[in-house]
Image 1 (cartoon, rainbow, N blue to C red):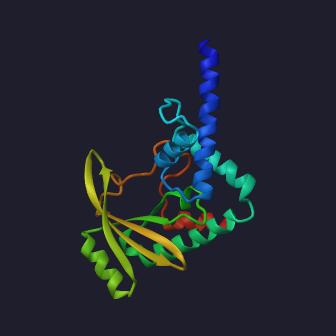
Image 2: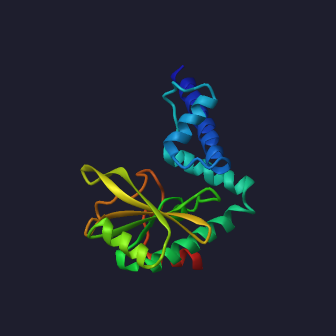
Image 3: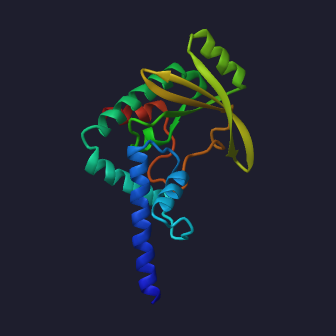
Length: 201
């Protein structure tokens, strides 16, 4: 009986991972937790304990993109990585690190370029943006940095038609800044040279 239940749970996890991946690929859902919760509601399994983890969803997303978006997604990903390189060069003084879907290769037309910057304070970055005539919006997002929760300044801009989010952390906090999803495969952050290498490969 336990074996049957385990097999049923595994099948359910795979089904929910596929549904979540489709939401991310086709509807632009960016948050893994929201995608799995919405997938569970769609499947009538909102109270299920057998939800897929982020790694399972990411694997399903890669499979979905390979099957149904093989002609469009690679070009979309390349464009976003080109934007990432451009932005990281422009903001080289702030020790930029690329994170998220553009780095891990699952980015598509709905994705944003997400970059971590490091500065004495957010005002220095705002002044940098103003001096270079970037149009931007500013907000804050509460994130875990090390052992603490802090409000991290974020700047939103558009570069070559792609949305870009710049998160500003304190100087010297590179080792504390979030590294992405703990379950993710591959590098979770990358410097400019690494992103340039991705484009060249």
